Length: 371
Image 1 (cartoon, rainbow, N blue to C red):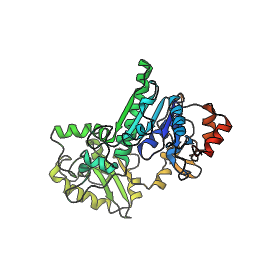
Image 2: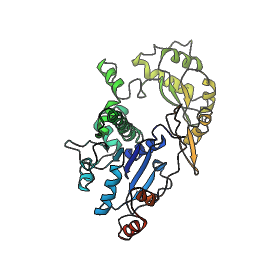
Image 3: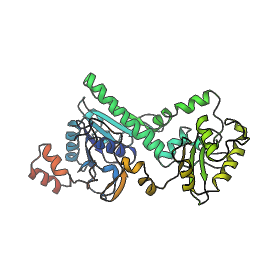
Image 4: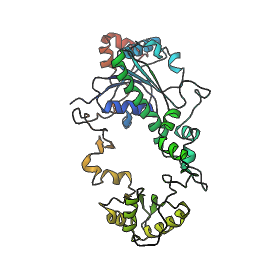
């Protein structure tokens, strides 16, 4: 059964980071995504971001390769590229070369304009520059990067997708596409509304001393007797009461939950108690309650979790564990993902659909235009 985005045709220029994930998530929901790959490069058998996509390998430094790319772009609804500003224009593949119905998604860290637009960076760079990484540290130790989930995939991929699908809706009204300039330094601050509000109220203090950054005893991780950990998220008073009950502290003379001055003392007491049992013993003790206590699972354990397993949160494609498509739809459920294909594995099919004959394709291969 086709997914909800079955009508969309997407051309994605091969790259790294948030743009390939955007293409994967579109493909997961049924979009027809074709990657324009380089004519040389490694195989992609385990590159999960390539699942559900087709691939054409083109030499974009050749006029013939650029011509084929422009034909593919002209036939697409959406184009995705993640290069530094100006790269696509130098290849003759910028948005000005597309029909005005095409939605052209541009994914960068710094955006298409500004004094640092051409400077290199990674997730940690954009988190640091937007002020967000500072909030993840403590006075005693520098911040630890939260994988590359926040800027790359949260502020990057998700805002690119948000922009692309908003542009699809707009095109349905106006009949015209547009350029979507998705920048991680725009997306990361856009996710900080709650924190900005708390700061404006004067209830957010120094890093490492707040509700959500590990400063509160009721929202942090604790080490257990077996060296493994539990995560506690008992923010609301009723949940905090259940946490104290599960720890045997419901009748203890403890400070008020929001007494910040007492947080270090309460944290130390909770840490001592959690250290008396194993992770799984605590998980069993709190199972089925609203205390918001969860075992910190490894990726292997998570796949077998009694909720995640039956729900099918993780899938196994050709022996590679990965996420299943999300979110879920009642009327147009996402199709089962196809495993990643090889670079250039669909060149013949795509070239035929563009109107090229077999002898023309053979000649272009001989000329090094495609593989």
